[in-house]
Image 1 (cartoon, rainbow, N blue to C red):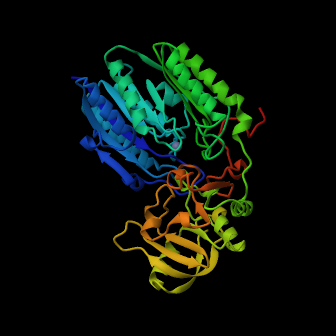
Image 2 (image 1 turned 45 degrees about the horizontal axis):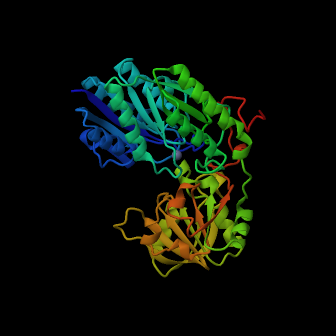
Length: 474
Ligand SMILES: [Zn+2]
């Protein structure tokens, strides 16, 4: 019976965030052994296991480890070594016929600018050249030659928000089964046009101009014999690494020249539209003014403090403007453990004066001094300590840990219905539109300062390849 090892190691690293990501952060989502090999596993792995079971190819699935941490600063060497070691030990223990790894593609460690490349190289050294390695990656993967050289099958998410994970898992499972039956012999190639883009700019795969490249990739996959997978990856702008920027990885059947030709064509198409991805976004003051002119409810995306892109969540630029402009109905959520504790200690009904937010880094400050009435505090049984404060018409939700806007569980638990406010600040880029749907909200995206800013002059790049558009006019 043939054996397939399954594992995962996922982190989106914002190298400008000075707070390192420790091993502890990977306990956020950690599964081991047989827990990994479950059709009910979330994301790509669940899809992979389901498709493998359906294929009924008589394969034995060997679970190793799946570990994911929320986005943040560079992964410590100790965390990288610990999780890699579990994956490598599984391979050491029992020989396998194939490997499937669910990765992000934008992991940076204290000493590796290409975490996934370093991991895949070690896995390849362990299993040798004859064992196929299949990989799924996030749309915001920073593809590198080392990654692509050490993987035989690569699929990258194609939807934003990322709703196609299970489908990507099924896709590589089916191709890996065909590989193990000897029906195909996958080989990969990479194109790296000199272009930096990043969420949440003008880069949705369902919109123009980005849609042109995704459509063309799909078309080539369907119509060009021998092309198994053709996948653009957008990269992650908040990384100072040599490979920063977009990429295209193509998997073809036994024909590396074909894979390279298709990758180059798609890379050229991405690059040809380089001037259209970059749009000018309003600063905080202008964003609030624009939102007030729009039909409510309006959600303002705090572009520089996008928690999903690894930022602290305590940026005060928009809160400060909302108070300065006298907005009479707004909901703002802010990470501030100290203010949360003080409001909680004061208790429901108390009027408190606090300095909130702006404490993590100068870019996110200064703290805002305000006086408000504590109207709710979280139940000790709730997973996140939080306090709700009413400051005139502004509802402020203070939290002890940073909570992104992709779900509304926390506001709902404190009785907050964001859709009832004229303005809402979302510390996200785009993915939050799942919980703040376009059927209800209008959106303003703001170029606030921070580690996820869309203003490239914010970032002291030193290691990235040059020339690179738009830093260089090419
Ligand atoms: Zn992503």
